[in-house]
Length: 120
Image (cartoon, rainbow, N blue to C red):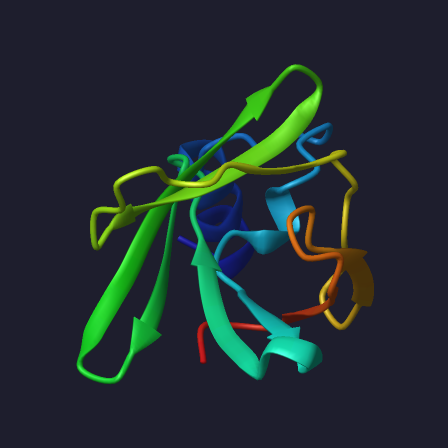
């Protein structure tokens, strides 16, 4: 089997990408989240199955995300919070290397996010 034939065969086995999924660039990459006024920094790994996780030392913070009412909403599930806050934002496709700024809906603090290549 030639390399071109092998590549074509593997492409047929790969799951089809959804071109209209604004979260597609996040899967397999790292989102850095920085809130300068709150002295907060995290690395978040977002997965296509609707979950996310952030390493914290030897432990993990985990959560879920979903499309809800035309927005992308996420919230923490582990460690369990009594009243987890849902953070919802309009869906926007992002590209690896892109940095954008949003506002924390509770505090109004700027939230600086960057989509980095790979899981680091």
